[in-house]
Length: 260
Image (cartoon, rainbow, N blue to C red; front, side):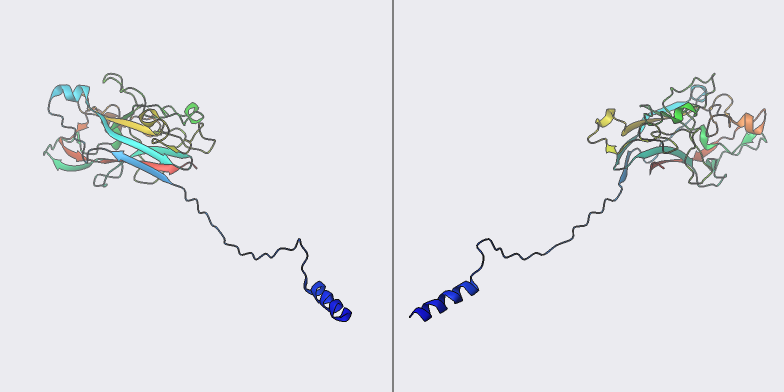
């Protein structure tokens, strides 16, 4: 009996596990996150904005379309926003397309009207051009429209000759600017009008449009990208020049891009 008892005890000791032992089985799963940059520009505007000049007062004082375009921005990255004038190029990439010619055969009647004659005014200043504003004559389109007797390039639309070139450091941006200094210096930070102040924020812009032909119709406010050179018909074509009567079309393209 003693041998049997000893044998049983030995067997129990052989197969017994330590009191602190733990069985573990592990499996892993890989989680991947892809943060795609998001740039979203919402625009509310009529399909067509018309300017009809059929009396002398309109030629002299111009016609203004108030808050005709509303721009709303949402972005996950630092961004810039600018406007550029474009056409189909029937009169050249920097000119309005002439759709109807009223038959004026005077050699001084010019059909090539510069896209820059269209003026913009944004209701809120560009708060992302602090550094660039020191070198730009006009950092944005926030200036009040000038009177007819005082030609100003402050609101003339940026034109790039049909290319995809953004304005330079001396050009106009609606928000942000050329360069990569820092948000608040030449860029706008990520955010959205939905959560950053709505209509009073740097992510929301109401845009007015004005065309002022003048008497005669030479478009005295037309100017190049930095406002250094005027592009009115007399400056470009010589004394006695004026716009040929007719119907003209062009379009404004708003470009939202990551700050670079």
